[in-house]
Length: 85
Figure 1 (spheres, rainbow, N blue to C red):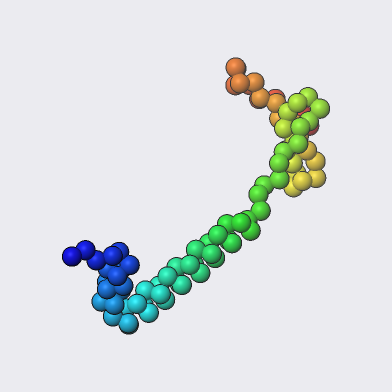
Figure 2: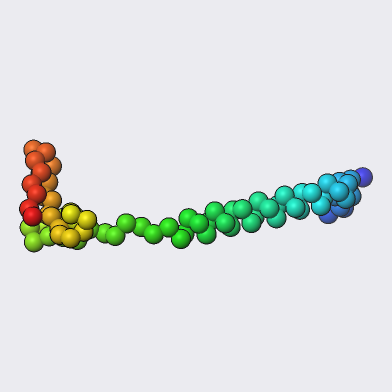
């Protein structure tokens, strides 16, 4: 005799003790809260400001504690780096 799937599920559910079911629900709630905290913490991190493009097409980077900027130009073929202040 075949037992429908819902009855088989209910039969298995009844076999789990009440204390263990509550403990599993507490674990699920704790894990959910912890995951939400990690997600919220990851979203609140600020990213570095994007670099601007200088007049020669290089990247502007702050120097002297942000008082002035220098433009970095790099040549990928030769590995040469030029700094314009």
